[in-house]
Length: 522
Image (tube, rainbow, N blue to C red; front, side, top):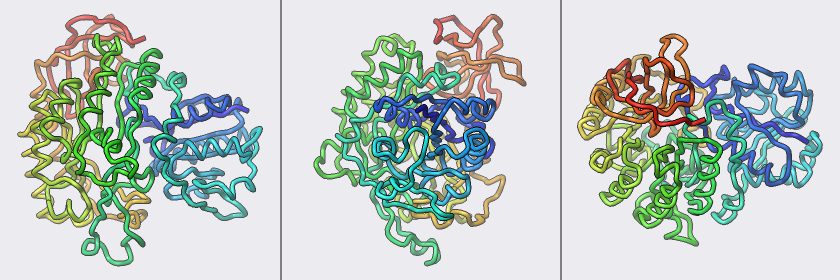
């Protein structure tokens, strides 16, 4: 029996990634790793590859797809291609898309995996629900964490309990199958170090939404986020497991590693409160001994210590960015971006939404990160419920304050209600939102200004390909950042080069000239 795992994350309706094209998430490799440990034949590919060459599906007996809610259109197209070639052979879909189990009927898949995938995937194959490319639905009735179609209806089984840390650590993501991704050697490859979130604050939505749109029971976490409902409380993987995965990926040719989690500064905090769960976003403070031990261990990898590969982190809660935390991150991650969630400039709305940090803490977090050599990126959300003209004005002022504090980029994104979140009942409703929202326009303007501050910087980048329209080389900064356009001739995909920033092409793209050739990623 051979299984194909397809990464359809962030592919939207058309099977193509439009933004963050250089990111490879951890979920599909995690699922593939479960099958590898079971001795099942498995390969990993992308939605683009399948839709461009659907004949490849004929080589497999089971299809597994990882996707988000916004990717439903792409999932439906992949399932349709599978049915044409493999008939009724099983299709299993997991990831955030499964927080709304009724998607199964809309896309024509057989099984949805909701919650943590590893134990569910393992039982699907070890307890006989999927055997020799056949789905036995009677075996699904006793399995937690699955939804499935039966006699024209969708059956939703109860969610599996959150895996304790020691159970989670018995699974290991595939590193071999990273080669199923085009440009894996230039992409940011995510390695999960923290799963779940410590913010179990209950949002206070009573004055924000009419009663019929309030959740039936309290939903902890930021009101717009589904992390807690999907993955539970925060847990940290051991240093040795993270080291092993990063080392193996680098041996495969990966050069840009992101240590992922809803909040990197939750790393090791759960160890301080065991055997209880970590459900407080503020206390205890960061476990800097654990953070330093992890980063020090990874920095000992020769390719990282020599500058041929880079490690980064993604998200941190502003309220955990103490002076010492910023100093520790700067010691090992200098020159890399760190994302901070601000969301809105209105303190009252932050409290209503269940955010654990204040506006003041967010500004101070940006200052501290910048002071210690990091490059703060800040998330701002617009068209949130409760957004008034006054809220927008406060948010615009906050964005300027963040720029002055040292924010290198403002990522403005439109509120989208997610199933499983406290605001989940808004999903499917028409929400008014200006196409040229002032927050969106302000972010573009600030980002262009911020990029002008980069002129004259030196950075290291990986050459990826010729831009099809601009006819210049596209390169990704090793430590992440805006795409770089290079004029030089004689370059090849995979070249690692040192670059000086010479200009700003747009709010997303900068221009540079090569200083010298460093080596090759492939």
